[in-house]
Each structure stands twice: as structure tokens, then as C-alpha cells.
Amino acid sequence: MENRRVILKKRPEGEATPDCFEVQTQALDELPPGHVRVSVEYISVDAGTRTMLRGEGFHMQVGVGQTILAGGVGRIIESSVDGWEKGQAVRGGLGAQTIATVPPEHLEKIEETNLPLSAWLGVLGGSTGVTAWIGIRRVAKPGPGDVFVVSAAAGAVGSIAGQIAKRDGAMVIGIAGGKRKTDYLVNELGFDAAIDYKNEDIGARLKELAPDGVNVFFDNVGGPVLDAVLDNIAMRGRVIICGAVSQYDDMDNVTGPSMYLRLAERQAKMEGFAYFHFPESIPEATQELKDWALDGSIKMPEEIRDGIEQYPEALQFMFQGGNLGKLMVKAS
Image (cartoon, rainbow, N blue to C red; front, side, top):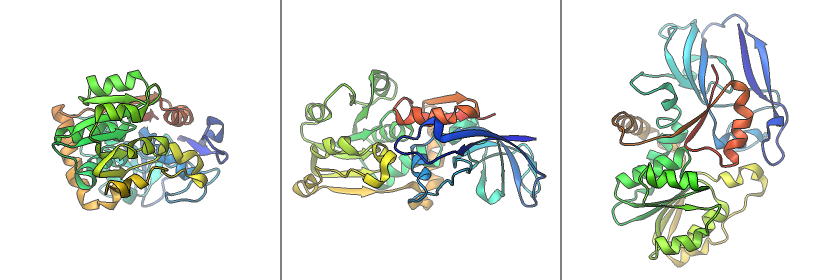
């Protein structure tokens, strides 16, 4: 039996280009005691992966020559552990590879429903749908009368965050790149408006769409986008920092907001979070997201690249702003 895996060939300097990675084939040894072997079906492609390639940082790090860390879903094909049987669907840190050999404490069993396995990385994923749910319900808390703005609005987190904010009564404005994405936000996901940052002036459009200011900003981008919204923040507005994809290629020289004094001027506040700061909320978030996905009242677009060798290009595609919704690689 053989495993195909994506390793870090060299540390990126700036953009994580495909030449920083290599796809290797390795023979698998006999299954060690206390382990299971998983045939990986889908691998999550996440912006946060870029921060794991530096050698140091907040997130876990990938060593040169090591398998790229990534969440995944698949099925057990071999087990030496009671209660973890062949055929069981699982989710966990399976890595960017076709077959993962891991102890079961690194996995969770998936209770299969009418949702595809890919949904457990998308709408039900910890770093995607669950992050959006916790960010809205536990941190941002938008409600009726609020103008809610979300950046990277057509991405995996932003698309769900905007839909939940809309469910909770807010006026929702999404910021995304390109007409395909802005049309999708308004016509398919029900956002009230969308701003194309590639072809429109964000600040000017916000003044038109939200003349009284932005009450809640859910930021996944940072940089100039964050500054443009800060300049339009309402009195006692709230800025929620979920991510900063514009900064991940050069974490040693992060560009902070130049408009932060708007927080003082308008008695606004800024707060950051990660979903694992709220472990008690994860079961509730997962169940509600599952209910919405099953009844069709929430949508999670998916883009899936076929084949493990597509992972390096898929990661680059994400940072170029190409994907709509959740980006994954179908490994096997």
C-alpha cells in the first residue's frame, strides 16, 4: 500500500508558490498498535495554512520535508483500535495526503446524514462554518437595525457569517473580488448589497450603502480593506477580527490599520477570536448548521480540485482570491 503526500520542499519567501511543495509517494509500513489508517477523501485548503509554513508562529508549524498540515475527512480502511472500525467516516488533522496513519485521539467520528462528507469541512467545518457561527452568535452579535459588513464575503467563513447575520435581522453588505462573487452574494445568498473591491472604491460605496456608518464589521482580510471600513465605522460600532489573509504572506511585516483612531473618535471597539476559544459552543454551532444545511436554509458553495497533486496550485489559487466558497482537494 502506498501513500501520496504533499511535503514542504522549501520555506516560501512571500507567496507560497507551487515550487515550495513536492508530491511524494511512500510505501506504508505495517499499521502500528493504537493507530488507524484512513483513506482521505477530501482535504481542506485554508488560508491559515500559510502561517504554518514559516517555522515559527501562533499556529502549528510544518518542518521542511514534512507533510503539510491540513484538515480532512475520509474513511477508516484499517484499524488496530477497538471501536474504530473499518468503513467509519472520520474527520481530523489528516494532512495533505491520500492515506493517513494516526492515533484515534486525533480524529472524530462523523455521524453520516444526507450531507456529503465534504460538508464536514465546509458548512460544518471548525475553521469554516463553525468559526462563522461562533463569530456571529458569540462575538459580533448583529441584530435588527445593524448594518453588518463582512470581508472575503464569498469565502468559506464570510459566506456563512453573512447568511447568519441576515437570519438574525441585520442589513448585510459583503466585500468580495469580482462580479461573479458579488452577484453570487446578492442573487444566491440573499445579501442586501455587495462591493467589488477589485473594481469599486470600498469607502465611497460604504458611504452610499451605509450613510450612518457600519455597526458591525466581520473582517477576514485586514490591510486596506480594514482601513476603509474603520473610516466608515458607526458610533459604538464593533470590529471583529477573524482573519487577515492579506497579511499572511509576510507575517514579519504585518501592516496594522492606519485608521484605528476612528475607534476612539466613535467609541467603537475591536475584538479578535478563534473558534477554539469557545469549545462549549462548538456542539450547538455544529447542530444548528447541520439543521440549516439539511433544510436548505443556508448554502455553502464548494470548489473541489481533483487529485492530491492539485493541492499546491489550489493553495495559490486561494491566495489569488479565485475560489467561491469552500476550497478543497479530492484526494482519493
